[in-house]
Every structure is written in C-alpha cells, then in structure tokens.
Length: 355
Image 1 (cartoon, rainbow, N blue to C red):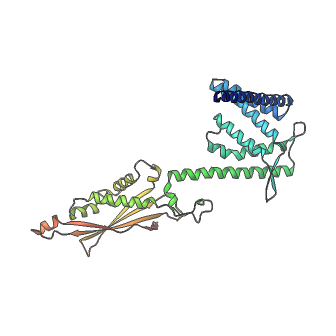
Image 2: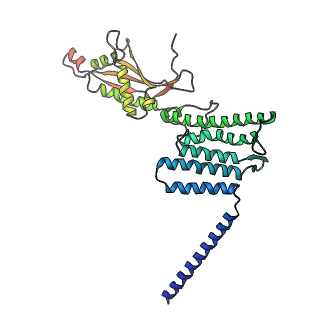
C-alpha cells in the first residue's frame, strides 16, 4: 500500500511540475512576442542575450568585448525603462529622479569588471556620483527627435548645481577612504581627541584607545633594566652618561630608541614606527651623588590635535645600594649595586623649540 501511494504521489507531482513549467514557458513566449522592436524590453533582452553569448565564449578578450555590449544594453534599458520616473521621500515631500543613480552605479561596475579606468570597489563608490550626474544631465542637451540643444539659463544653473553636489559626494567618499588608510597605517591617531575636529567624528562614542606611547615606555623601562642587569653602580653611571654622548663620542640614545621601537612594533606598522622617538634625559644630582634620575620620553612626531604634538614621560630614579660589609673602600665602590624605581607614565605637552 505504501509503495502504491508513493508511486501515485511521484507521478502526480512530476505531472504537475511539468504542467507548471509549460505554463510559465508559454507566458514568457507570449510576453516576448508582444515586445516591440524599439523598446526598453527589447534592449534588456539584447543585454540578456549578450550575457548568454559571453558565457559560451572562452577567450578573455573576446568575453570582455562581448560584455561591453551586455553592459551597454543593460544601461540603456534601465535608463529607458525608468526615464521620467520619480521617487517620493515620505514626510519631506521631496521627489527626485532615481534612474541616473541606477545607471551610474551600473556604469561604474561595468568599468570595474573590465578593469578600465576604475580598478577597485573604492573607485566604484568615488566615481558613482560623477557618472550619475552625467546620466542626469544628458536629457537637457537632447530635444524631441534626438536633436542636440543648448540648455537655457535655468538648465545651465541646474547643471552647475548638479555637478557641484556630485563632486562634493565623490569627495566625501574619497575622504572617507583616505581617513581609513591613514588610520590603518597610523592607528595611534585613534588615541587622539577628535572633539574639536570639523570633519572627523567618532561613529561609536566610547573610551578612547590607549596611546601606543604607554607600551613604548614599558618597553623602554624593560630595555634599560636589561642593559644594566648585572652591572655595578659605577658601570651603570657610565652607561647613563653615555646615552647622550659628547662631541667626540656619539651617544647610544638613537640606537636605544630604535631597539625599543622595534621591540614594541616588530615588523608591524613600519610607517608609524618612523614618527615615534624615544628621548632620554639623565640628571646627576651633585647634592646626592648616590642618586641619578633618568627621564624616558616617548615623543609622537606625527599629526596631532594639539599644536606641537604631544609626548609621554616616565621618570626612573637610580639609587646606589652599598655593600653592607665591604672589606675595603675599593671593594665598597666596585661591589656596590643599585635599584631602579620608575614612576607611572604621564602625558605632557612638549616644550616648543627655541628658534
């Protein structure tokens, strides 16, 4: 009984399916037979036929050549079908022609697909308003009978406003991608304050990211501790004194700065690394020879919301620890060690250079 039921269901389902397919095919044939030769429907059918032909071809250049016709017929058909139609925005009762915007985006995608003029999706968005303005403006130059005419004063004014607005939209798209590229290469800029910016605003308000300078000063402190590990107090003083160097002997500050920045960044963000600089300042206290202060400063030399940029500083104090049971004075000096105490990092405005 179950086998008979299954056979009957399969038989009637296949039969109904074939009937539905025949009905749909007949409807399509009837619609095609009623299509006028000079109409937007015929143009879209030519575009569809061109796409079908392109799929059957193998050579890349031949396919691109046929795709020009496919895209061209598609643009003409869409523009023709939507010619004169308007979209009404609720509440504000504003109407605008949306056909040029559809034709413009199709033209941009066509150029992008053929790798001509437009090379990426960014280019599609940037050029979209300009191409849309072109499609919106050409009817003003054509009169009945496909004759060329010169727009009147009102028409020329509309064209100027149209291209100015389109240029503004295109510029904003370009500016958006430019800002994203800058933040990709210099993510430390996200830690800056944009509250006074006239053109950049945070979409998701929240706590600002921490500046990379804090991590750089952590690496700087760790690097200093590694450099001085196992050294005596006298050796540590010599090393601290050699950071800036003299006129005859160059200091090791630049080399130390490069090591610290490489330690923090590695091979990432090479452009941002170039605009960080670690600067040191050693202060020997004449009143207390057993104490030396080392100021570590991470200076951001890139773009900043503050005039002159900003810097982060961390003060480290080196204190001598004398051997409690020296056998001689020389022993006391040679075997004396030291301890390091560093204060928390704080932000400061760099002192402007005196010219």
